[in-house]
Image (cartoon, rainbow, N blue to C red):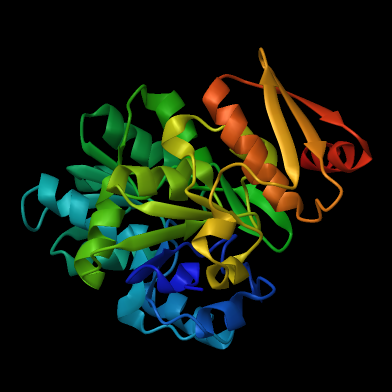
Length: 327
């Protein structure tokens, strides 16, 4: 059997909610990645830390993580800004010093005030965001400057649960200015293009926990994807996912990389009887239906063919327990 992780030449791995939550590695992640021969690149929408800091964090948690294998949305945002403004231009930074440093590295001048006459605004997650930061950025954006957001994730998975992400801050500036930013991070192409250039990968597998970022980014790249259910997106989200957010494979966590692609692929399963009746999806477990994720793969296959919001109708105790657990 060829395992999923051996079927691709490079893995583009999300971090928050996929490899770790805050300061804790997700159970099974260390061993799963250490036993995979495919090259691994860590592609993160979190723009609050430098690649070196991210690599150090991964190493502290027991992962193998060379700094050049870390691709951040801060790097991609800085590159995107540099392509849109003249060399040496002044850029107002709403974010951490790590984001400001990426702006310096592409030959631009980071500032924090509208009075410094910026020609662009770059925005990334910072836990120190305040009204003054947003006010300076709003003035610049309303004046017509280029606006680049590192990402628009509305939430950030942590060991405490889901906390506000950069997308929540972007929403505040969107409301205040009526403008839309250019986006560097997943699901947009800039960060994925950077990952491809950095890795030289010809057949990547995108791995993550969010349909609206990781999986949608895989579709934008034209790559296969593995959704792990250790972060934001849920089984119910999978069932009702639009076409551009549907994963190729579903696994419980990163240990799925050691299962065969056939085990993980969306499709019918012998142990689960699933059929459609109008907008209803009727689910029934056979006697040997032990794998709940197999049930999800079978249900998703039928639900996606219907194409609209579905109603699940479980028949039997096993199917009822499975469907109830998804809500």
